[in-house]
Length: 223
Length: 308
Image 1: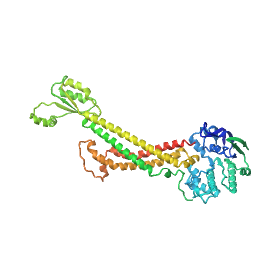
Image 2 (image 1 turned 90 degrees about the vertical axis):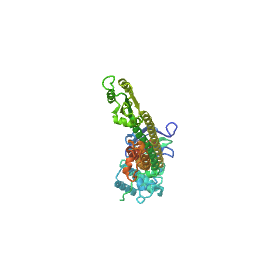
Image 3 (image 1 turned 30 degrees about the vertical axis):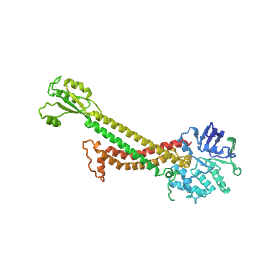
Image 4 (image 1 turned 135 degrees about the vertical axis):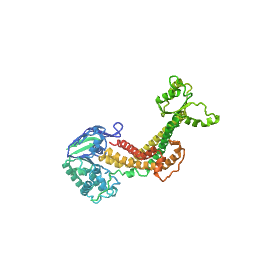
């Protein structure tokens, strides 16, 4: 599903930049669920940024869903992004679009029919419990509601690889439980999932293989 | 399920407001129209000067019926050379009546109608060519005393001046186009900055560069088309007035009159304004639209290259 070999990443370029990741090697198969653990500044977000194709690794080999990322053409990278869902820590909802339009965005970029989009959006918003807030703007929602909208947008197109950065931060225990159940269901259906968190309680409650980072280095990759 | 309006998050009405860009493009189109009109006017004047009276050379053959150095009469020999020389469009020998009519003021002064007159041949040369100079020695050999008068010296100088004016007009158009391209680039980059958050997001959701640049280019192309149309319409009355005033100088006929015009009749406009100018006014809006579209495509794609 994705393979990293000897991957390094530095903010602001390889030479003068600040090292965020050093010599990371990973091999995660289809349908696996992995926690990505480590304290703040460990490099979790940087690793997710590389996997979500938001940044390019400074060195090493990255292969995602069979595509060698470092050598891929821009158009192939764009197609690859359509198979990767990401829940960002800061949600990244567009404030001038309604909740409906925010969630519909990935499907519209895939040129799906509007009727199909409406059906999908209503179904996923019902699942996250926000079917009554479709016309609201993101800034009219609470932090937890915004997070649920961001999750809905990331999973609506059934990505082959799902990346989530602290997705339970703004959720209460019940909602976090529902989210984890959904993640495990998606993994059973073949979606590879990587969830970054520094919430030890939720990791203990939902045990799964984990990748642990510290100071940009991989400390453990245990299953 | 109620249908919803299509939103892809780019919100181009915010990124590229509909007032600013069309106004600037209209101003540029107006200036380009004036510069192009100047170029077309200079071209027309040049055509008139090189194809009209300026392209006529007069050849005087004294003793036309005397024997030539070879065989036949001098006038026949000269006409034979002129008729077969490359670069000469026509060689017309003035008849006695035409000649006496031409010389009537002088003949009347001398009071001698039997004065021997040379034969006069009016030679029309091809535009931009000087076929007479190489013929002078041959003409002189078969008809000594033959005189050739070029009327093209001044017309050539005026044509050169017209050529310079055309070059200046072209330069002005290029400058206006360059400024217009810079304006479109600046507006597009400002729009990209305004919608940076949305662009980065839809890029990360898998939008192709061609999709984002196409959306921006369509918007800018449309605004530039509207601006070009405005510029053309604004230039039209001024060009009509200028064409009307310049008609005596640019007409291909020698009729230096300012005929009254019915300005309410668009067909009358077509008679005043050179057709090239009308085509130019029609071509200006699509040219502005296409220029805006291409400039935006390149600007957006270059900007997107910053993203991985």
